[in-house]
Length: 205
Image (cartoon, rainbow, N blue to C red):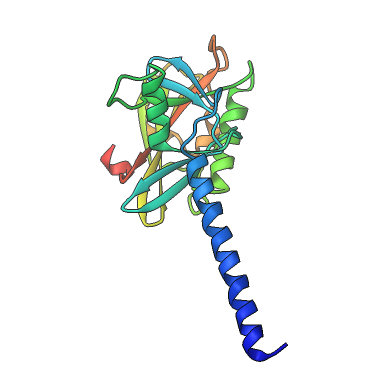
């Protein structure tokens, strides 16, 4: 095989590879705009259980992919999630969710909460000390905890709402580690909430 012919074959191979890569990228983008039946469950007004593998946020042409705890039903754009909710009368047009929901088995709420934190320690919170949230707000015996993280240069906050086994928490200084906090295992429906805030830090919330 001559050098000229070898270059032609190599060039053709490269074109085929690039073409297939482009088609795969387009296919993945189109797939992520489709919300599969059963991947969104309305828990209560403005609150949802989502089962996506990843939720994809967008800003200035960049994509920020966030894994979803217990999710395995494919990647979905955040905008596509909202469009699905509007189309199916799960949200009023122009409104967003108040939170996402994690349900646990009876007696396993604290265990599930810890699994949730360790799951995110493996990806978006890998550079964060998950035992010490960036911010904690106290509401009687309930807590909102906030973790700052960054994806593709864009700041995000993971907010988690939990109900503890205490009727009253004096102040946040008494919480040395979030793993020392036991959740209310006597809830009729054992749950905790979470949501993501794009382009914000815990100081903004």
